[in-house]
Image 1: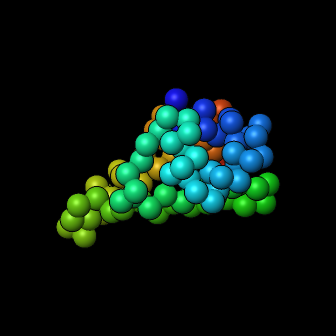
Image 2 (image 1 turned 30 degrees about the vertical axis):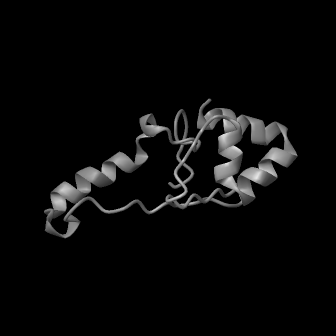
Length: 96
């Protein structure tokens, strides 16, 4: 199973969605995905009027990178090939 399977199940099954939101480790384990309990996992539900911005960990020694290198990294934020499920692909990004 994949994360996509968990998401589509949550869309169709309110009880599973509630479990995914309240106890993501257990809910994902039900569909064959095991994530270490040492990892904090937070699941949030997107609504029509809500968007989430996830601030990733900075690259190692980001403070030592020149500004032009940081700009190159910023450009990858809009790359949907990494699994982004926002409506950016095939249309305007909701982030502008």
